[in-house]
Image 1 (tube, rainbow, N blue to C red):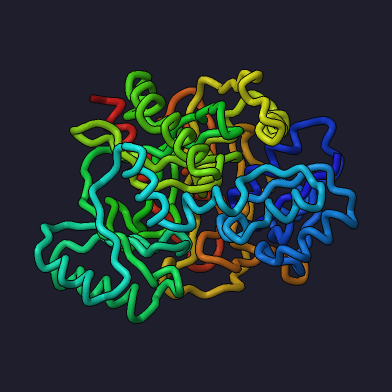
Image 2: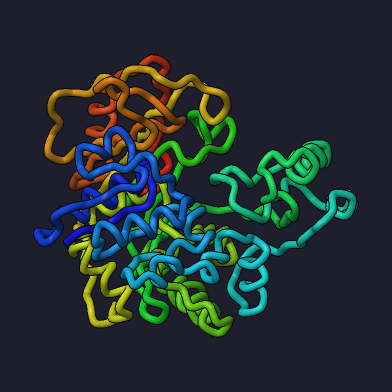
Amino acid sequence: MTLLIVGGGGREHAIIKKLKENPNVETIYALPGNGGIAADAVCVPEIGATDIDAIVAFARSHAVDFAVVAPDDPLALGCVDALHAAGIPCFGPDAKAARIESSKVFAKDLMQKYHIPTAQYQVFDAPVEALAFLKTASFPIVIKADGLALGKGVLIPRSYAEAEAAVRTIMEDRAFGDSGSRVVIEEFLTGPEVSVLAFTDGTAIAPMVSSMDHKRAGDGDTGPNTGGMGTVAPNPCYTEEVAQVCMDTIFLPTLAAMRAEGCPFKGCLYFGLMLTPDGPKVIEYNCRFGDPETQVVLPLLRTDLLTVMQAVENETLGELTVEWRHASAACVILASGGYPGHYEKGKAISLPKSLPGNVTIYHAGDKLADGQLVTSGGRVLGVTATGPTLRQALQDAYAAAETVDFDGKYLRHDIGRRALAALAD
């Protein structure tokens, strides 16, 4: 089979490595891919992930049997719709269903209408209205840009002065472009956070192993929000009892709500959850695999990934048993110094000649320059290890991270610490 993967980050590298395990897969094209992905797939760097017409033309001319659209932007732009129109089987939601991530307002209104537990919220189209509301609010509070913002469009002001600055940054300065034309302001929830990715064909759902992300740039959850500095799986806070509550009150009701709204969701639906004193609540939905959650979840998948994706496309997921390894996984992100702010690119990357069998390096922000891998993004590499325990997985991931070098390499040193503490309770 010939496969096509849209995207070029660590998430896509993890998907590609897992798809390669299927013996029927002969060729995988990555559009655009990256320098490290080139070792596992045929990269087409001249076609960007949002160049929908070029993606479809390439898929047609290269007799692609199955496509996977991984990032949020092409999903929101209708890449799956266009591939389907061209007769190409594809994994991922159509543009109408992708609104569950591409519009925070759509998602919040959906949850309110169908009684899916989430934070109380208000929507504002003008800064003056938002600021007037904030004068009566209690802090901390959460302010979100309506549209896609590379995972950085969420601010948590702890005072009115910070909130005013946040509103002006989003709505007046347009720090996130048109995504900030509207904002959602919602109550600040407390409790452990859990990420649950799930395969769904619109009716049946197969949740993946839970995970815990680490969004802040610095140790001790300090500094600005990032796209994610590391992950562990499974999340010890997500017990079987909690999982059942989430299935009954969040997962199945969300699928039913999307069907009722005429936009059934097929693909990977990401549930960002907060386990509050009042029970699990939805912080956010994503319409695709999380990054870097994918880098710890897919290594634990025992069932063939392509088989699962085809069942989603064919709406036969309910006939398939999706199995997982009883193990743990940890991913440590190696970032460029300065990320998520300004950082330099083009730094030569030194990788170890060999890795232990339980360790994988996923390439996210690098490219080939004269045959040498160099940095090209903020999050450069994800070092993932699996193990019988979380402590062992973390130990092996950090040991492997020390064998990688590039100028300005930055990483958090406390990935998994909260999870280990939860296990000890």
